[in-house]
Image (cartoon, rainbow, N blue to C red; front, top):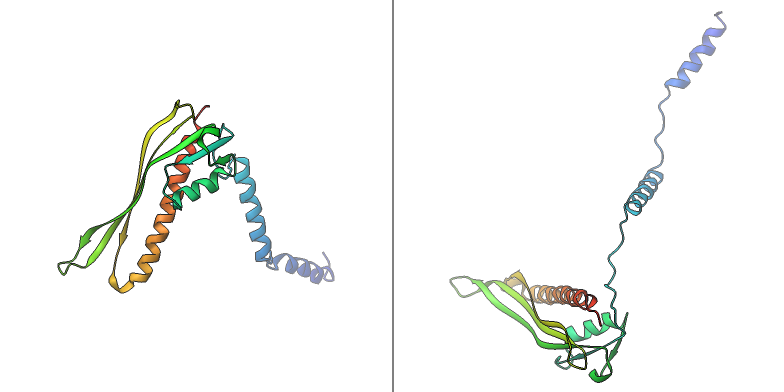
Length: 185
């Protein structure tokens, strides 16, 4: 190696010692998201779908007028089957035997201030054909949630209570739909 080659060799080594710049953050996040999507898709992951119903029409009876539970059931059922008002024309009749929302005090202070309540949603039902053949015998569903309470935040707790009842109702509707999906007409 001659003396004129020494500066060129030093320049080559300096280029190798230069630190590598990391790839941009967005590119890394995009690559990570793509890998996660491929990994989840590859394992057979699939979002939960509503259960498939094996009948074409259903009638809801025994519900109170403007029942929130009946309205949500009707909304979910109309995505797959016809919801009829006349039970005689339907393939399946879903009869509500009891549809109750309850709240009870679980804990209170010595000054009689409520500290904790329990919210309960009860639904008893059965399903049958218009001819009277029983498809689902009497089922009693009970969901409950605990709710801490403070008079200071009464309005916020009222909204929280309404939200808990909505969540319990959605859970109840999905349980009813799963039971109806198991029915063979």
